[in-house]
Image (cartoon, rainbow, N blue to C red):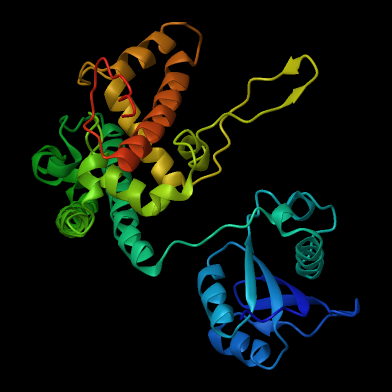
Amino acid sequence: MTAIAVETIGCDVSDKKSELFILTGEGRTERPDPIRSTREGYRKFFQQRPLAHVIIEVGPHSRWINDLLQKLGHQVTVANPRRVKLISESDSKTDRTDAELLARLGKADVQLLAPIQHRGEGAQADLAVAKARSALVACRTKLVNHARSVVKSFGERLPTCTPESFHTKAWPHVPERLRPALKPLFGTLQQLHLEIRTEDQTLARIAKRYPEVEVLSQPDGVGLLTALVYLLTLEDKNRFKNSRMAGAFIGLRPKKDQSGKIDKQLRITKAGDPFLRRLLVGCANYILGPFGKESDLRRWGLQLASRGGKNAMKRAKVAVGRKLAVLMHRLWVTGEQYQPVGYSKPLAV
């Protein structure tokens, strides 16, 4: 039998301290001193209190706070900050007022907080490998661009080559005057290349533990990295009643601002994970590019881009990325073989 929470506690978590606001079962309010944002600080405060409904916002600390408080018997709601406009748009925003608003919204109707659910620790740890690889690639790109820029300022140019081979093919073309300055940079690029290869091997081993990766990577342009990140980010294929919801979950759905006869065209919501969103748009870029294979998805995207306009191709890539997210979820749920051209939905028997 689940115990009933007798208090509602709004908790505004900062990196070092957390502000608290308590609504008791009798309707009284309490504002205790801030507690340290550590396991010890939270355990010391919450293990002594009656069972409570604790409201926190999603953030760097929300995962372990959620797990700790649930183990202590408390009910926890992790609020989506994008939906809590009373906090984000307040003209008198402080940690104290944020904690109070969280408590009062949680007391009134928890659905106002658009509660989120953290993925499992295993999936989070595997996803961290992919994100670490992304950070290494970003560092490599920045160093390559810096080297090219410096050499260009001396009236020279480094040869065109892939980022993977840049540290070997570009070094012989570096002017002698710049070698003392760029030698450490090229050494770092070599080390980054080795570390990225190591991360690729780790991701390949992780992917073997998830057979669905092979199903998700069927569409042209979707590699192991995108398929694995997609699976680990969504985690549960049954979380959506309709595959179309996958595009909105990742933040690729356009915003809506409709009133009467006015229906504005707006940018996408960007509500989901930015890493996965970037990967899907990158896949769309390949699908619509010169090396993309013939498919219904490619035809649809190119037709959309052909309508003209300054940003037609950019919009088409985002739209294809959204359709790709829906397609991958459909393949994940059904496990069917992907048909790039002339797909027709199987008839129910």
